[in-house]
Every structure is written in C-alpha cells, then in structure tokens.
Figure 1 (tube, rainbow, N blue to C red):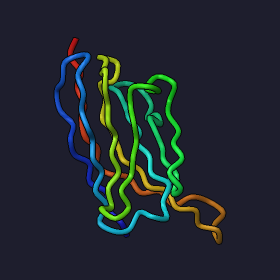
Figure 2: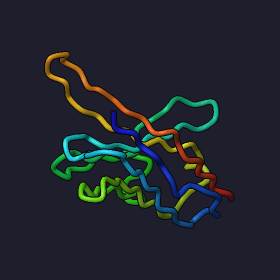
Figure 3: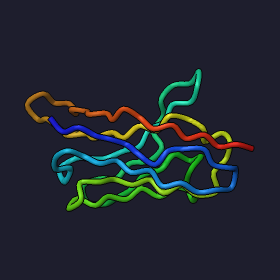
Length: 120
C-alpha cells in the first residue's frame, strides 16, 4: 500500500508563503490527490484537489492564494500557499483517492499531517 509523507509545514507570519510537499512511496498517477486541513476544534476540510488529468479544485477560502500541483514522475504533490492568514493555521493532510469499481467506492490513503501555523 502506498504511504504518503507530508513536509514543509512550519511557522510563518501572516502574508507569508509556504510550500507543502507530499511524497508517495509508490505511483500516484492513477490517484486523485488532495490536501485537507484540520484546525483545532474543527472538522477536517478539503483545501484543494487535483485529478489524474490535472484538473484542480479549491475551497473558496483559499482560491487565488493556494496552488496544488502534481509531479507523477517524482511521485509528489505540492501545495503552494501564498498570502497566508492566521485562519489558515491547521494540520494539513495529504490524501490519495483511487476508485475501486468492484467496491463502488473510493479507497483513500492519508498522510500523517504537517502543522502550519500562521502568526498575526
């Protein structure tokens, strides 16, 4: 089973930038990849996703500030975050989805998360 390892989190001032990376132990070319985040006391939410063909989807709160990209050859997904706000503070998780037809559902794999803290 593919494992996902996130990196790149840290402490940044408001207005700053960070780039998160999600390195996979195996091929991700057949997976929809996504970044989710969970702030203290809140539910995990989708931040951005990218399809196998490169189509992207963003939460309204990050649109125009965050960019998701993938490098299938490097087995890595990135999340470039700019103009960070204190409300972006959360643990960010990488997610890989594969549609399993015989089960009629997605198989999901999660990374362990990386903490992003934005100070005001």
